[in-house]
Image (tube, rainbow, N blue to C red):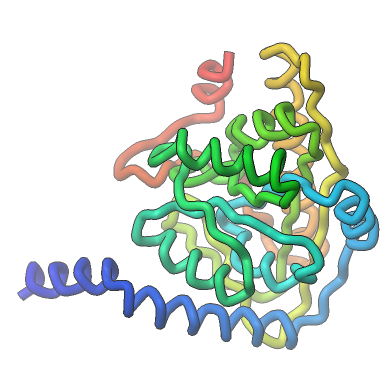
Length: 257
């Protein structure tokens, strides 16, 4: 009986019809949350002015805090999001399409080269913005990979981190990304890092220094938003999406060198 239910569930999750329905339901829910939440926005004007000036930028968002970000897009500039083509990515892709975003399918672990070429062409040749989740698709959460820095170095465009927090939310602590599921009729904070430009001639050591600086900046504004709203801060994780796979901060630090 249990095996039969699991089999049906797997088929359902792979169904395009199911992902379409779930994507639309989540879209409606984010609208409800967005419009019924009193948002305090930090550096929003500076962010929009920079976007107008640069025309295209590189946006980064933590995996666990990606759901509400499309709500704040003003549609003034084209926005392309890198989304995993696996089952969980289908739901996010449907959500983003309802908001009008363009989707680039792939990740750092699947169709990586194809996605990288498309992302670079999008920001460098088409002069359109790209959005990347730098701790996806397997984590650990709030640990940034180097991919956004590659596109910034090749295009000359800045990297800007975006985050949000809400006073009342459910945190999926058993998931690798500690996803924040906000509730309606809430208080929230939206915040941005400063823009980071990566020199074209930057060395590997310099790139790693930039990576650490950007990672720290996005972590800091995320945690500070939690604290300001009076909720327990969601801290960087050590668990990856792969079953029974853990990575410590010390191991990651060693690997980076």
